[in-house]
Amino acid sequence: MNTSAHVGRTLAVSRPWVRAAYHLGVASPAAIALLGLTALVVGLVVGVALGSRRARSQAEENEASQRTDVASLLGALRASAVLLTPHLDVQAASPSAYAYRLVRAGRLAVPDIEAIAATALRSGEPTDGEVVLEKGRTDAGTLMGVRAAPLRDGSLLLLCEDRTQDQRVDEARRDFVANISHELKTPIGAIGLLSEAITDAADEPEAVRRFSARLDRESHRLSKLVHEIIELSRLQFDNPVESAQAVRVDTVIAEAMDRVRAAAEVKSIRLVRGGPMGLQVIGDKEQLVTAVNNLIDNAVAYSPEHTRVAVGVREREDAVEIAVSDQGIGIPEDEQGRIFERFYRVDPARSRQTGGTGLGLSIVKHIAAAHRGSVSVWSSHGAGSTFTLRLPMHPRSEGVTTAEEPPVARPSVTKGTA
Image (cartoon, rainbow, N blue to C red; front, side, top):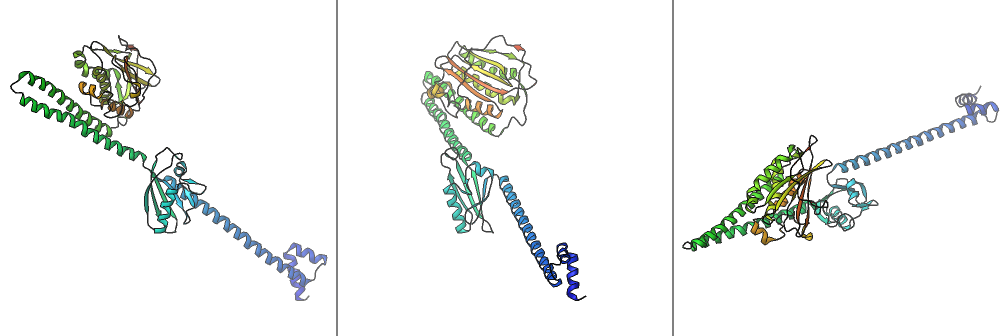
């Protein structure tokens, strides 16, 4: 047997289809050897191709995993984040970036933000800016702080933070300081002038008594204003929910009524209390007494003589409502939406006469919000007003006893919820 025949037989044994061709006599041993070698080469090529395909598939999986990791990382950032290519195409973006509609179809959707990103890419340095989102993208006037930072691989990280609330807080703080300055100047100036008037009228007992009475009112007003400013500032940092306790509504109302009883007696105003007894709410007792006291004090101050101020209590769903009703002059409908603003007064001249500071209802609103509650007003010109403080009820409340006198009747519709 020659060598060619031996190779042919060997290949025929190792490859079934080659062996079949050999036995059928369709090829010589040399041809069969060549055919087997060809099959071996084809097998190698197919193996390399399959390996390359598996490698590409693995690379694609790794790339997809990396994109997922980047998206997760961007989503964990507080600001809206976008990762851009050197051509400003979007590689990944956080959910909030889509919520603010900063990204659309793989590109930045806000031209001003894209301009900041382009500037950062050209300079190679982090670039900051502010952009007001156009009406229709989000709420009108949304202020976005933008920071674009180039990365080492040539991509760009874009961080956008909503600064609208910060801007409003700053504006409110500036307004508050300006209002305080104005409100303090008025009684301080009056006290100075009255002091001079008393000195000049030393020989006129009647003038001295008149100026002294006005001086006393202005000093009382100044003291009340300073106290309420301090109270409002303190409330900014106190969170009654963190140390909330069960508070008896009966105790809160009794203490609040006691604080204004003397002022009510001067005007012959009757204070009455109606509704179930034994209810409890969740919160801070001192803050709640302050809130109810401010409502009753306002009702007494703006009520004519020989009328009554009623404090009613009722249980409604999972809350307790404390309603303070008066028989005063009422509040015009177009003013009701602003009465909870700081230093806002419906009638400034009347407020000066009553000693009002314009902070009482603002304090009530703040306390209500801090207790996860609300305050609202119903009023009709010439028919009086009703302020309703709504607070979360404690689950162990037992409102089974009813007070003797019912509150002043008022319609169930309320306006000006704060």
